[in-house]
Image (cartoon, rainbow over all chains, first blue to last red; front, side, top):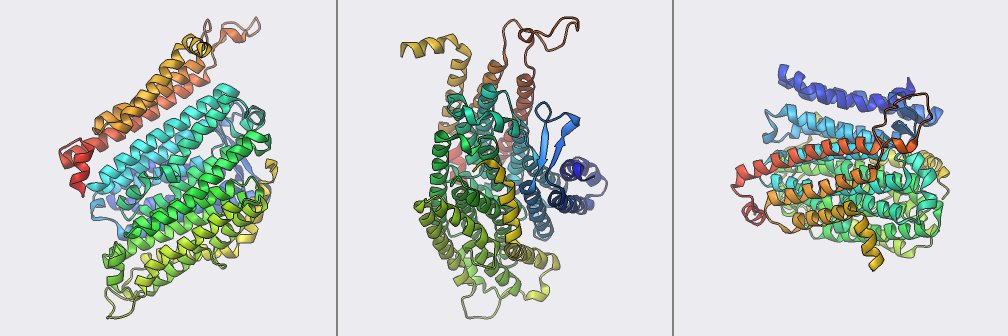
Length: 489
Length: 125
C-alpha cells in the first residue's frame, strides 16, 4: 500500500479536478466541499507517505510498471514527502480561508475556480514527485496554465497582469524545454538519477553546460529570481485575494525545488571546476535577489506588494544556501523553502483578511483602520518573527543553517547578505507593525467574537505551523541532511 | 571564423532554429500589440520543436517496429522514438498555452477595446 502513495496523492486532486465539472453541474454548492475533501484525502496520504518514508526509506514508483531508465519514475524521498505535506497544508489553509473571502467576481463561477485550484495542486504534487525532466516540464506547464487562469480570474487590471505572467511563463517553460533537449541530445537520458550517472563527466561539454544554463534561466523566471521577477508582484497583487496565498506560497517555491533537484541530483557537485563556477553564479544571484528583493519591498506601499517582494527576497536566501555547495547550506535552504511556503501563505492570508474585514489594502489604510483584533495582530506578530528569523520559529533554524553553510564555505559576502536581508526584512515588517499598533481612537470593524471560525482557523494555522516547524526543526533538518548525504558534497 | 560558418552551413536546421528563436524573442519583447507578442512567443516555441525534431532525426532509418525477429536488430535501421513522442507532447502543451493566451487576449479586448499594451496600461491606471 505504501508504495502506491505517490500516485494516489497525485490522483486525489487530479481525479477530483476532472470530475468536478460533473459534480458542480449537478449541485453547484458541492464544488467547495468536494475540493476540500480531495485536499483532505491528499493530506491524509501525505501524512501516511511521510510516515512510510521515515519508516522504510524512499518510495520509488514506476508508472505503468516500466522500470526507471526506460519508464517514468516518481520518487518520494524525505524531501518530497516534506514538500507534499507543505503543499497540503498551504492548500488546506487557502481553501478554508478562500471560502469566506471569496471575491464577488467568483460567485457563480465555482466550477472553473475550484477545478483550476485542484489542477494547480495536482501539478505541484506531480512536479515534486517526478524524477524525470520531461515529466517535470509537463507538470510545470499544468501549474502555470492553472496559475494564469487564477491570476486573471478577477478581470479588469488582473487580465493584463495575467497576460504578462503568461508571456514570461511561456518563455520560461520553452527555455526549460530547450535545456532539456540539450541534455537529452548530449546524454540520451531524462531520468534524474540516470542523468546523475552520466552528467558529472560531461559538464565540460558545451551542450550540457548550455542545457544547464537554459534550464536555469527558465526556472529562474518561474522562481522570480531578481532580474527576472517583474511579473510576480503584479500577478500576485492582482490575483483574487482568495488564491494569492496558494500562488505565493507554492508556485515559485516548487520551481526552486525543481532547480535544486536538477542541480544537485542530476548535475552532481563532485565534477570539479565547472561545477564550482555554477555554484558561484547561483550564490551570487541569490545574494542579489535577497538584498534587492528586500529593498524593493521597502519601497512598496501596498500590503500584498510588500509581501510579494518579501517572497522574491526569500527565494534569494534559499539560493544562497543552495549555492554554497555543502550539505549544511543545502539542508538549510530546503528547510527554509518549506518554512517560506508556510510564511508566505500566512502573510497573504493576513493581507486578504485585512482587506476583507477592514478594507485596508495599503500601509496608510492599515494605519487608519485601527485593527484591534487579537487574531490578526497575533498572527502577524508570529509570522513576522518567522520572516525575520527569531528562535522559536522555523525561519530561524532555516536561516541559521544557511548562515552556517555560508560560513563553512568561507563565503563572507553571502554572510553579509543574509544579515543585511534580515535587517531589511525587519525594517519593512516594522513599517506595517508600527501602523498596526498605532494608538488612539476606538476600534473600528469588529472584535474577535464576530470573526468567522474559518477565518480564525486560517489566521491561526500558519503561525502555529511556523512555530511547530521551529520546534520540530532538529529532526527535519537531520532528515534533510540524511537525504542529501549521498550527493558527494 | 570560416570554419564556424562552414559547420553552420552544414546544419541548416540548427541555423533555422537559432534564427527563429531570436526573431521570436525579438518580436515578443519589442512589439506592443498583444497578438504580435503571442506570434513571437509561438515562433520561439516552434523553433524549440524544430530543434527537438532535428535532434531526433536519423537519415535512412525507419519507424521502430521490428520487421522480422530472425535477424539481429540493426540500430542504424531504426529511429529513436522518444524525441518524437516528446515533440508530440510539447506541441500539445503549446496548443494549450496558445488557447489560454488567446482567451486572455479576447477578454482584454472585450474589456478595453484595444490590443495595444501602452493604451491598455494607460487605461488601467
